[in-house]
Image 1: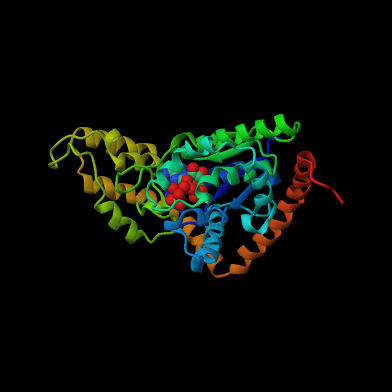
Image 2: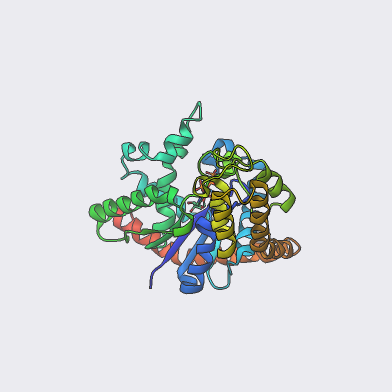
Length: 330
Ligand code: AQP
């Protein structure tokens, strides 16, 4: 049976990019593979992004990200679900991988180049991010990694690290593959400026109030060809058209696509119809989140149990890796 691993950073409020690109897939694969699906709030990664990291808020954000995943439907009794910093073997394995990973490989990672380009002083941890990510996955000998398209390059590097380790020290780790949510490869930000990202402030949050979501949609850019209400547009070139594909049912999508092309519907009405789909999709998630907020021990207990279950797998794998590399065993 495949073993699934994926992580999500507690760097801000989870958004519809995380939701369609990753979180929904976690739930689906969890239903299929049970305790062979392992999910983690990757809090050790959070401080690598100085812009989005605040020590006073990290614990709360880790808790909130765990809560959000449970509200989306992740069942900690069915899967293994924990916070990365509660399993110290992640950093130990990352060190073993650090010594076999060429700096040049890390420097060519797109995410590193994007984030480092915005910083005056680049922490080494930002460069090492994909090494820790490789350790996260391989610590569980996972072969299946549900992620958004932006992470594919990192998973490729994980495969390379596994290959290098196996070549240097003997067959130990599988070469994992990324599993993409086909309809949600890279969800655009509500500003229309590239990928939706927690740290870019261009998100629609899955736990965000509907009034606030509407205020953002109201001013969101649409197809620039539609200057006047009577101008026809191209829904395939419009952010709102993209979002309809995620939230609306087929008849609604057809109505707004035809309406846009024939100028039969205005952008405000099109956005209102989208808002209905958003309410339908996110209301149950927000209701479950409110229940969990009223009973925070359910989240804390789930994470404590999850960390114990994760270590049952991680400790022997780490032991094996230590022996392979040649450390003295007492
Ligand atoms: N816009 C997106 N479209 C599709 N998938 C996405 N993911 C993130 N944004 C989109 C997927 O969500 C999972 C968790 O992401 P993460 O929190 O670990 O890190 P990220 O990819 O860096 O997400 P953000 O929001 O962009 O965070 P920051 O701003 O903190 O860097 C991943 O599987 C990701 O692919």
